[in-house]
Amino acid sequence: MATAGDARGAIDAVWRIESPRLIAGLARLTGDVGLAEDLAQDALLAALEKWPQSGVPDNPGAWLMATAKHRAIDLFRRNERLERKQEELARDVGIALAMDGADLDAALDDEIGDDLLALVFTCCHPVLSTDARVTLTLRLLGGLSTEEIARSFLTAEPTIAQRIVRAKRTLGATHVPFEVPRGEELTERLPAVLEVVYLIFNEGYAATAGEDWMRPGLTAEALRLGRILTALAPDKPEVHGLLALMEIQASRMRARTDAAGDPILLLDQDRSRWDPLLIHRGLAALDRAQQLGGGLGPYALQAAIAACHARARTPEETDWVTIAALYDALAQVAPSPVVELNRAVAVSMAFGPAAGLELVDQLVDEPSLERYHLLPSVRGDLLVKLGRTDEARAEFERAASLTQNARERELLLERAAACGG
Amino acid sequence: MRFMMLMLPGGELQETGDWGPPPAEDVGQMTKYNEELTKAGVLLALDGLQPPSKGARVSFADGAKKITDGPFAEAKEIVGGYWIIDVKSKDEAVEWASRCPGGEGDVVEVRQVFEMSDFPTDVQAAAELSEAPPEQTQSR
Image (cartoon, rainbow over all chains, first blue to last red; front, side, top):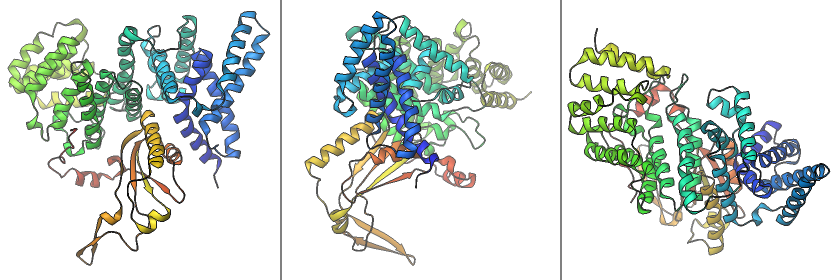
């Protein structure tokens, strides 16, 4: 017999699967994402009350939707007494709710897909700060609780709760319509969506703060979001490019740390630990991006670089000349000092440390890299290869003083010590 | 967390150990289910298997190998196909399994995939002995 604890787990699982569709569907009906989430949460509370006794219904998604709609109708009836304007709104919504029926399955799949995509674009709307976009995306599309998000970002729960409330208020106050942008606007706004997903991935893949170098929960969320996006927008090459990049990077996760949790650099990793299924998926997604004519998009280019590593069975087999060329292309389409730094590393591997150092030295005065620990870290690495260990030690020490990550700091201090005193 | 969902077909298929391509109606339903898994971002891989009558078994006993061609007379719980999914919990995997359009007598078994971190350190060390990774499946 099922216990209460079992029921909680089953309800959480249903919530995880159904909540994005539920919120998206409700947002379409009410035109208000904030209200939609409140209604969905009400339905969840009702489920938590009922299901432990009654068991999970056969079609839990439809049950949650019907319950949320009843709440909506109650809410609008109550509000009807307040204001004429709200009265009109209530009538319209009431009609929409009544006409829509209770069966989620009855809605066309396309429509649900469109609603979900509208939810994605709303969560990542430019009126919101980047933090707010990330938080809202994890909350509404990932189905994560405030507490889970707070734990993932090592932030206090009230801070996250406040961020969500403020974000919802901003969306309401600025009258952001609940819709999928069309044509040119879609092209303009897609990068913001991809950026949010990749930010989530990176926070999990190389945590910027805290004791652990990786937080696999966040990379898993980002991968799931990326996979959902490729299903929602299959004709957008950069969506596949981003997924390719994340799948290939994630394929290395179990090789990236040793038993003590310390990071292992790419070229030192045991490649037998790379996940062949994720590599296969990543290469397939990259293929798709290229077939759709998006091989030169910034994510697809990064994925192509990651793919060069994935295809090399040993570090010696790495095609550094191609990687250097891909970084060259990346520097053209998405110029940034960080890309230049990576290009310098690739050039050093393809054409020798002196050639790489020449490029790195051009970045030393770059203001945006002043506090970036990887600049002295890379410079130190090249100096070691050139036998200039005294200079290298100073660079590693500087890098260690700049990183916020405890594990990485240890590694850098070890490298400094290895340079001798 | 990665799980494998194993489809153990029931009824006649289980008894005969022989099947051809499934009827169009079943395929339609299963395709819809697979699409749901894809749209939810949880599906990593899936395959339907040809019947045991076209397969073989290699069994190891008393230091010897024995090869038996299918179908297998005394076999129970024949696997008809599998899905590999990436989900947050066993509950989520079970919820997905329960949404599978299974026929009468079918069983979907849900099994979690071992992660390297599940192993003790000596086992992890043994796994590190291999020099080169297995050949990657090419994307085309």
